[in-house]
Every structure is written in C-alpha cells, then in structure tokens.
Image (cartoon, rainbow, N blue to C red):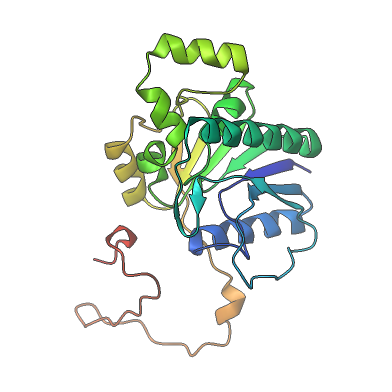
Length: 242
C-alpha cells in the first residue's frame, strides 16, 4: 500500500472541467486498489453542488485560492500574506495527517506556488499530472509571487528565512516526475515556461471500456475514406481540435 496525498486547485463536485474529473477518477481507482489516498484542495464551492465526496477518499477543502466570484483575485500585500500563511498551515496539517509516500500534484491554477516550494524544500517525492499549460501561466496567477518578483532576490530569500513563507518560484525541473496529457502540452510548456521537464513522459487520459461494451461494432474505415469525428468539449484552441 502506498500513501498518497493529492494536491489540486479544484476537486469534484466543486470543479470546472475534465482536468478535475480525471483527477477524481484516478484517486478513486487508486483507493479501490488498496492505496491510502487523501486530497487537499481549495475551499471553493459551487452553489447547489452538494453531492457528497466519494467514500474512501478523504477530501480536505481548506486551501485558499487567488480566485473569487468566478475570476482571479489579487488582494493587497497583507491579504496575500494571510493567504500564504493559511495555505502553509493547511499543507502541513495535511502532510501530518496523510503521512504520504508520494504527493500527486494536479491542477495548480490560482493556487499558492509556495505550496510546491515547501514540498520541494522538504524533499517529498512528487509526481505531477499536467493536463493543461499551467507551468506556462501559473506564475502570472499568483499575486504573492508576482509581488516578490519585483523585489531583489536577496530580500526575498531573507524574508523566507525569517518567516518560513516561500517568496520565490521553485525550480520544478529536478523536483519530481511529470506526466503530461499529450506531447503537444509538454512542448507548449517547454516553450512558454522556464523549465524543460527532463524527467517527463506522456500519459494519455484513459476511459472505462465497460461504458462502451454494448456499443455497435463498426468495421474499420477503408484507407482514404472520409472519417466523421464527434468532438465533445469546450471550443478552445488549447484543446487541439485542429
């Protein structure tokens, strides 16, 4: 049995898309296989989404996002410091409770990058499941990191030593293993982020074949014939529809 702590911005039923659903699916299946799984996610709530969490996977909805009322949120310096202190306490509580052998990092959008800094500094084994381009844009979504990027690095390091609150962006390349949803996503992240992800691979999203077991069998399409494809999802260039 492996003890796993999953860290992610959103988690069903309070979620926005397939990234979070995929995370939920993987965590539930890991728990079904006998692993101890706990989830640390944000306190975001969708009005009317009162479905209970899946039994067997404790979900701790204690993190605060830089996201409010359906949009990004950028409080003042003291407000940002309060968010960072709160999230560091929530992470340490989760680590003490779950005692993980590995931390599974999923969506990081609008989440404190300082959480990754702490995990890396304390040498927790990390596996990243990257299903969108968050390595390319996540630094712009964290107002705490943005604030300290304008300050001299020695000042940021001194603040970290005195307060224990991370103020600099961690180096992700040596921090763990990266599982990208596609080669396109990996290449976009390499082009648009400071990292090259040397320890990475492509792991496509799976599906439960039992859901389609009763479907009508079709013969293979002859080479050169037109193929008709149904795409289900958001119309977004990043989805790779073209």
